[in-house]
Length: 101
Image (cartoon, rainbow, N blue to C red):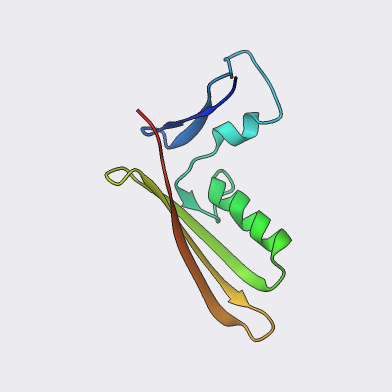
């Protein structure tokens, strides 16, 4: 059985089944930080920006910021972009609850 654990101190996701000697295709994901902006390639925000750019062609100049709010145990996600063809501003905010011990 495999599940992910959120490490509050490091703001990273850890796999319950991953050992120090194990290598797999998902290893890169576990090195990324939850908090950060899409300007930093070592964050989940960059991955989300890449997915938006790939699957949502109506948006351009996509920027993503993710931040972990420890008191609320939430990962807040802020997305800013421009809607094509006119370049109108687009903004979307959401949050994800984090379960951790």
